[in-house]
Length: 146
Image 1 (cartoon, rainbow, N blue to C red):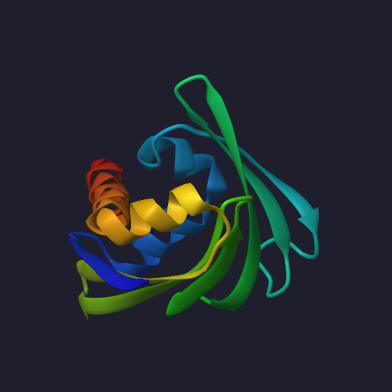
Image 2: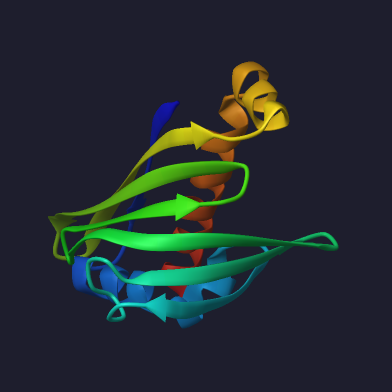
């Protein structure tokens, strides 16, 4: 499953990228974000691996992020692996003018490891796009306040 989400942010690309790459900001726009922990490689560099923790209700969800492309301010692409699924997320930052930036996120789910996830993807594919778009929209609100 592949999809694209985008948002235009009323800030310079440099400011958008600075806010995006600072993991301390994740809690401001990613629902349930708890922490990130570098578990291998150099922070922010290709090949770096981090453990991302999210809380969903009473459940803790962990994702392993591996950086595939680190070419900011243009692109940041990561692979995210969870016990039930894996996906890649390519983040592109396009300067529309001096004070306006478009963030485009291209997502591809590459592995679905459980029957329940396969059923959800088959019958409710828009759920994944809706969640991604929500986070992009929340980032816009957060970024424009700073």
